Structure formats: C-alpha cells, structure tokens
Length: 101
Image (cartoon, rainbow, N blue to C red):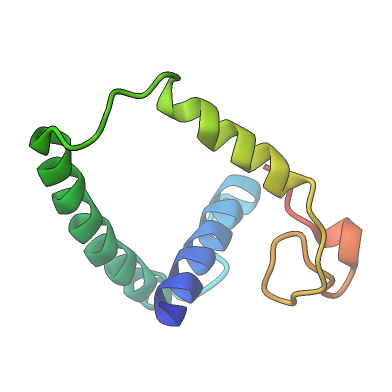
C-alpha cells in the first residue's frame, strides 16, 4: 500500500505541475511508472465495483455519491499537518508552497 500511496500522491503532484506549469517537473518515465501502478490498482477496484454493483448486496444511496466526496475533500482542504509528503504539510515554505486545488 505504501507504494500505491506514493504513486497516487506523485500523480497528484504531476497533475498539479501540468495545470500550474504546463508540463511535467519529473522525467516522463518516472511519471509513467507511477501511472502504471495506479492504473493496475484502478482496474482491480473497478472490477470489484462492477461485480458488487450487480450483486444486489448494496442498498441504494440516499444522496448523490459525489456529495460525500465533496464533503471529505472540503475537510481535507482545511487540514494541516507536519508531514513532508502532504500537500498541506509543513515542508519548506509551508503555507506559501501548499497546493490549493
């Protein structure tokens, strides 16, 4: 799981680089390696989602699925920590270098 966490976080940073700088800050082969790890994970999760969706084991949601995600994203946006790997962490430059998306 640590490898996937690093890959997913790296891809978020890669996406931020693309949005803010217009290109990658790291070698494309490094980014592609992370991308491959995350794609494998996504395929495995999607296969289980597809299977469980048709199983009838889950009740219908009472709210739009994006509502909970939006709430969790809003809570995350306001958190602070001293983790060097966190987008909101206490790395060099602290608040000035935080990524707000």
